Length: 495
Ligand code: NAD
Image 1 (spheres, rainbow, N blue to C red):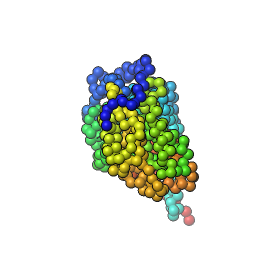
Image 2 (image 1 turned 135 degrees about the horizontal axis):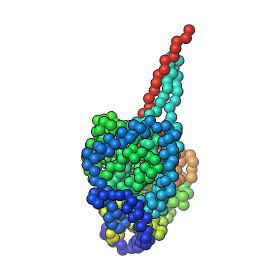
Image 3 (image 1 turned 120 degrees about the horizontal axis):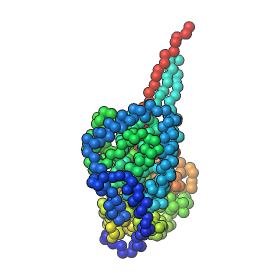
Image 4 (image 1 turned 180 degrees about the vertical axis):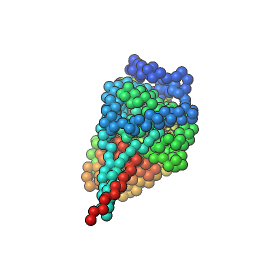
């Protein structure tokens, strides 16, 4: 496998002046001259440097957020809702700035970045609405001797750790429910994409979120951060989105302090296309589930299983679509697939492709990296991927469609579930009975049925097995930031 542009269409170039929107936002962030460099993955250009905070600075952030949290917890649900509504409105008003910033630091095409702004801001809107519905209830003891008042209280100071692939949405999906519940937050964004978080938190402050309530901590020493911060007694909760390996490490530290934890971890989504599927719908859904974010999504279709009778037609149509996808700078006209996040990711795609081909997979499209300053890899189709290939078990996190064929429903369900992961699954079939039966038997937290983009603010997003613990979004997402308590009220005995 060579690193070559041979046979690949030219990369889409950025529109002239398109960088100025993000540049203006970055200039307004008042970042230091020294610190952790943040690069544009499409060009390698240095965008900014963000503070590289040590353990002491992180503890200062904990102290500051914790004291602001005392006042915030005492606000009324309506006060919190009003502030969140204002934050949502400001975020929406600054959609273009946010989208350009996301594209610049993360690479996804501008239209997709606008989609992330819509998706990410919807969580703020949702939790503005949920803030006035904190829950609670009233029960009667079975023997009638007492009454139980169930109350929900903020869990306390929450540490929120986010990945680089959705710089806005992964932050708002945590910050908004934390604030709605009455918690303060220390947010640690990924060092590859911290600028969107800084900007979104700036807008939160402009919207009336108390200055100290959300502390953003950027650091190149994330291990030191978690060892220090998660052991601080003021911290009561950690919510993490990222890889399963790091999630395990954080769970071990959290165990010592018996912290509340939410873990949104790695995925390895099976996508099942049955021979009774609508071919066009299945191809569209697969393209969406595979290429969103260039495949760098935890719910990306990772193992594509196609039933024998429809396989040739499906593979041909998918190959045609993926071969024609414009690849290039996210700020260019019509770009559908942007750069991967870094060079390591490109090397990983090359290695996965090479390994699969050497073990017998058929390479039908792509399979090559671009010789460019950015980190581009062509959308790739591999058919007849053997189960021994690494791409059949690894979380790909890139634009490789790895196809395996299957014969029976029972067989494909067993193969789909043969993984320690359990985040998303997809089923394409026009048979309603089959759709529900298969979805029921997939060991995943969510299933897209005849569609490839299953997440939105109303959905309780999260995994089973080693894909995670807890849910984000929906009313369940608020539960993660609340402690449930009850008062047992004795009934006066009457004769
Ligand atoms: P990652 O685990 O390398 O990093 C995630 C975050 O954790 C970053 O902020 C990173 O700096 C930080 N981190 C790393 N080591 C740490 C430590 N010891 N202590 C504290 N923080 C630490 O993941 P990534 O490469 O940024 O993201 C990709 C992974 O995230 C994939 O596995 C993907 O499936 C997963 N992901 C999951 C979801 C979900 O909702 N389940 C969503 C997006 C991404």
